Each structure stands twice: as structure tokens, then as C-alpha cells.
Image 1: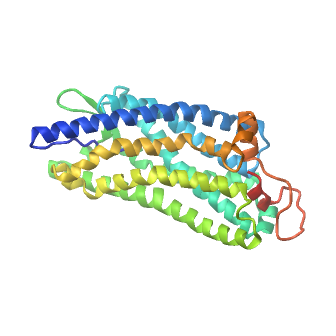
Image 2 (image 1 turned 90 degrees about the vertical axis):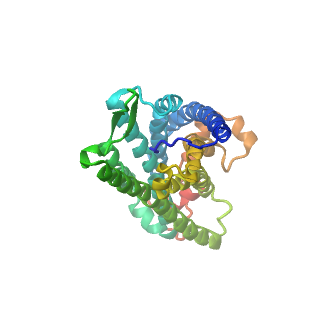
Image 3 (image 1 turned 120 degrees about the horizontal axis):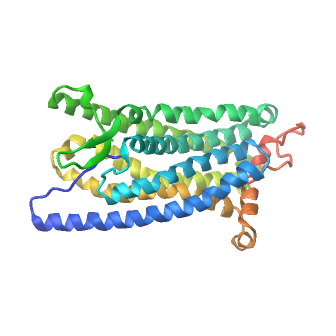
Amino acid sequence: MEANFSISLNRSDEMLHESTGYTVLQMISLVIQGITFVLGILGNGPVIWVAGFRMARTVTTLCYLNLALADFSFLATLPFLMVSSIMKEQWPFGWFLCKLIYIVVDINLFGSVFLIAFIALDRCICVLHPIWAQNHRTVTLATKLIIVPWILAIVLTLQIFIFLTTVSDNRGNVYCTFNFAPWADTPEKLLKVAFIMLTARGVIRFVIGFTMPMSIVAICYGLIAVKLSKKGMLISSRSLRVLTAVVASFFVCWFPFQLVALLHIVWLREMSLGSKYKVLGILINPVRALAFFNSCLNPMLYVFIGQDFRKTLIHSLPASLERALTEDSAPASDTTTKSASPPAEAELQAM
């Protein structure tokens, strides 16, 4: 959740120009969010159906099912966020939905990046330790371990549980925002507490909720690329292409938002005093819309990555998704050791 910032300049022509620019960017952002909602619901719904009900349960389908559930849950909150944005961040839905919506938003956005890191680690283990993976990498174990990203996401959402509530201003407008008043008895202490808590939240979101998972993904990618290049499989691995596209799209969509949000925190005091840094408030809407757009991209990537476009078009969506998420039973490990379960490294060519 972002703080609300307004543009306040002395010259009326500059105020009009920035106000108009802000309005235009907000309208474009709302259009993008509307498209994201429609495409995301229509895309992630079939992924959940195919991976959750139509296909045999494997580690791969379990991972991408959880990622689709995270995206779908987040997208379900998007209409509420859009209405609030149209109403200039006012909140007409009451205290309960104030907490619930933003809890769902944060849990699923944190959950998405942690799940991507989890998938990258899984792929890395399959490539570097194929024999161990064949013998120990089971759906039961994956079901237990995949709870960890969700637990981490819930822990990082504790500030929403504790501090987020509905607050009314002196004109009777209701906002869903952080309220630190119970934690301070003077305006000076309140301001200090707010700066400390918001700074901590911003740093945690950027470092733990983005930089660390992306670093894990980058390290896993490097190890995978080295191993597959030695075996001549780097180009032919469809699973790696899918994971590459998922990670790349997540980074491209989310990095601008994370950067602007971090700069908001770094310059929070200056922005509150009306400095030039308030221009960052104009950027929040477009970068947020770009970040949200990522939630509708993954189903498209599952269908089209690594497949001839014309061939994809003539197949049904469920069949395309099933091919994208399935595991191959053909051996592809370094040894001829057989296993009752599909060889783990074979998944690297299965998607």
C-alpha cells in the first residue's frame, strides 16, 4: 500500500500542468488495471482448473498452481482498489474490507515473488542434484515446503494486521490508511513513529520482499545455465524458457514500482514538507499499474513460450496449458538410475 501524495506548487500554471498530467496518468493506469483484471481472471482461472483439477499432481503443477492462485486472489481485489483510486484514495467499503483487501493484496504479492524464488530453487536442485531429486523430490515434500513462502508473506503483512484501519478527516472523508495515533501521545511523537514505521516497511518490502528473492533467482539461474550449457541442453530446455519468461516479466513489471516506493520512503520527510520530490507522487499510478499487469502475464507465458505460435493457436487453451505445465517421463539425468517417479531433471524439458 502506498502513501498518498498531492502536488502543491506556487505557480498556478505549473499546478494546472502537473494536475492535468497526474489525471491523464491516473486514467491510463485505470485502463491498464481494468485490462489486467479481465485478462488475469480469464487467464489464471483456466490455469487453476488445468493444474489443480485436470492434470496429475506433480511438483511442477503444484508450484504453478500456487502462483496462479496468488495472482487470481490479488486480481479479485483489483476492483476495490480501482474504485478507491477513482475516489482519490477514499475508502467507501468499511473497516473490515479495508483490512481484508490489503491483507490479501500484500500476502499474495509477497507470496508471488517468494514462490518464484521457490520454483527457481526447485529447478536448481533438479539440475545440480538430479539423483537426489529423483529419490527425494516428492509432491508430499513439496506440499510441505511450499507453505514456507506463504508463511513468510503473512509475517511481512503484520503491519497491515496491526496498523491499517479506516480514518476520517475533518471533512468526513474516509480513508483506508495506517493509523499510528495509539502509539504516540503528541504530534511530534506521532510524526516520528510514522516515519520510523513507514521507513521500516519500505526497506523490508524492497530488501526482503524483492531484492533477496530476485538475488536467489539470479544465483539459481547462473548455476542452471552453467550446468545445462556443459550438457548442451541450454537452448532446448523449454522449462527453463518458461521460468526465464516468468522471472523476467516479474522483474520488468515490479522493479519500477519497488524503486519508486523505496524513493518515496527515502524522501518521505522532504515530500511531506512540499519539496520537489513530490513529483514521485505522479509516478505511483503508472508504475503500480505496470506492477499489477504482471498478474495477468503468466498464463500467456505458459501457453506461448517455447512453442510455435501458429501451432499454439490451433490447440485448445487447456491442452496448451497442460503441455506447458506437465512433467516428462523421459530420462534426462546424468546416470541410468531408474526411479518410480519421473526423473527430476526431465522436468527441464517438459514445459
